Image (cartoon, rainbow, N blue to C red):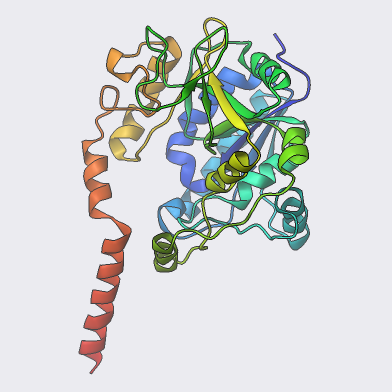
Length: 337
């Protein structure tokens, strides 16, 4: 069933994504490719500092091979490398930020410009954006058509998305707080946006928001950016969320007609996660989900043991890196004197 004319599925990719994208990208395409008119796979080759740059050079050829395999399988899919030329940056910035020039990355070194480049480049007005680490259960073949219909009926909704987390028996959320939305399926209204996934009405954005504010991050985050060698700007989702609040626009996430569609996001990266991914995706696609995971939008310990990832994260806090950097600098100065 073709969901709706004029819908682009746009997925962000970078070389550092390879270890999970080799499993999650084919999964995402299995869930949504048949519902859209264009599949736009945007590959960001602008390398930042920190965790977003891990394994960049060695993974680049392999992620290009993965994208080419997917494009060969789906005739309406194509690769577009993120264009950082001055002309492209000016055009993308003009559509979303007016005269302000979009930074390449946010204060963490995470993607910023590439999000808006994907939205700018898409051929269609309705754009379903995904980060490449997400998983989707339910398997509905009509969810995107239902999402477009919801946007057309609710002019105060800027974006919508699948239900966050596998559905509970009573339709409630367990890991997030949101206002229930009047709908024929479990649905919730949020005042903010997450750049992980959203289906956007681009014309509505242009007519109601017109231009986004470019904001600096908090002082603490600016220090982190300076330590890592990144740009001192807020996350793109924070920038868009501020504009949504200013213009009284919302995001709605809903399950849809049976079997519906729901999302699941991995909160960490670790070897145990990469090794578990094939079975995890199989569990998501077959709805073999433990009760403890239902209503939770992040993959929790009922599906993946995250203990090693949490321990590693605790040891690698940015302020610890700053402390070690200054210790090494002081030691080098003492040794040189």
